[in-house]
Length: 456
Image 1: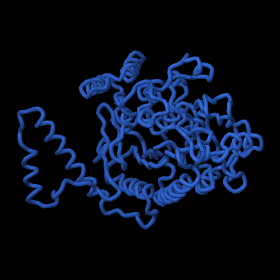
Image 2 (image 1 turned 135 degrees about the vertical axis):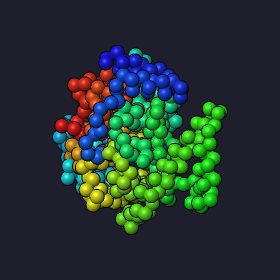
Image 3 (image 1 turned 30 degrees about the horizontal axis):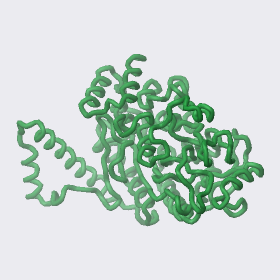
Image 4 (image 1 turned 90 degrees about the vertical axis):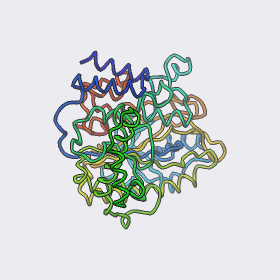
């Protein structure tokens, strides 16, 4: 078993990701019994809220301790939030000090945090192996390829193989679907559903996401016309000798059938009266509508991808972030309320990711690309009301400052997502397959919940 896991770990790291090779590896996994077993009990879903562009998350979660806030204000200068009017107070055990503040435009996050349903993850980022400031400065450890680049870091967060450039290692949620093929055995759609188009995170060696839209189910044009549908069906039912034509016909047949089944299950559900009309609101509304149709669709495990862009605030942070946080706060509040109404608040976990954190130092009115940042996780199963991971010193020239207030992450994204995957039902023995660098940071077999965000 150890040899097999090592083989797949090396395969992912080496990015042997062509379609043919990926299919072969997946077939070998099936033959080795990696993804066999009984269907999981109950229902669970993960919702990834991708804040693309690089959220300035050290203004999302800020120290309120007097000396720590003074350091924060000194390094942030024009970007610092006012301690009395800009922050909603919360406390956390397990940090060098207890007093923190949430951005004042995120009051619902404060409410759920105090209720124990929301947690923060501090100074999380893409890492290849544990790295100290001295090691980074000396070039003594491997670091993510294309560090500080939007294109590279967005993909790294989705593959969690940051030593490789591009999407060849496939996405971690796609690898989860590959491993958990015993889930959704009677399902009408795949495990992964995107509300934001194509993405790397949900593509596996065999698994592909189902892509839909808040405006409604995307159906084949004119397929509702019986005569047209009959002609299409006849065309797809032909016996093609050419392998390409045969594969295209089979793929199209599957896509058409999936869209029809999806429309039948979800098309009549409308929660628009319960959600704000905004980009985040519309997409989380659609997620809630799909969740409500989970039984009809035959699903017991689902992963959703929702992207909200606009976080690349080089020119101006304060007002831009206030507007986005206002939108996000209202959308998440509506989503939570709908989860409660559906009785799913303990079965669904929403989590945030972003390209990277941003410089603590100001460039005038904005901030620039950095590395470590903060995230949050929401759900009734979350060990909430606390900050997981190590909250860093926010000071110029601090122990994690690699320059201009770019903070070296102390929480690897591998650990963050391992907590999510373990709660979702990935066996501990398969975590290294999903997260090939995991053993650089923790023992997946003995510590499947390395941060304790979820789980026992």
